Image: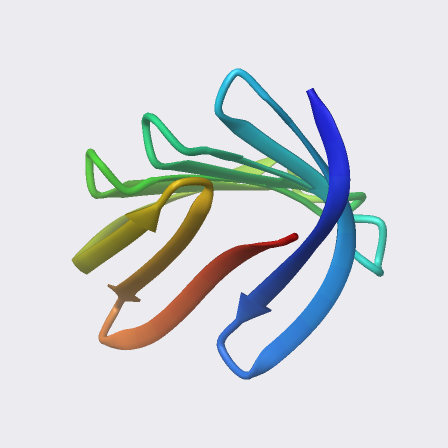
Length: 109
């Protein structure tokens, strides 16, 4: 288990955050206190905050978003997935309902 800096890029926004990695799962907390984990082996992104609990399973091309206030769950189809992984760095390009997204994690040595 290590604790160091991680560059997180979501579309055009970049942040440098503290993170931990344990058993190929990268965990970090975003500036808005959203807790995030990315499973490098299974390509599953989980985000959780006061408003939503989101799971994107890139290997199975499906996503689920629970809107907590409404206790309502949305199922999403994830398309056009391209995943590039080098060691513990990951870059995922994907589409949901014809909208393109980029999610990238870069471990800073």
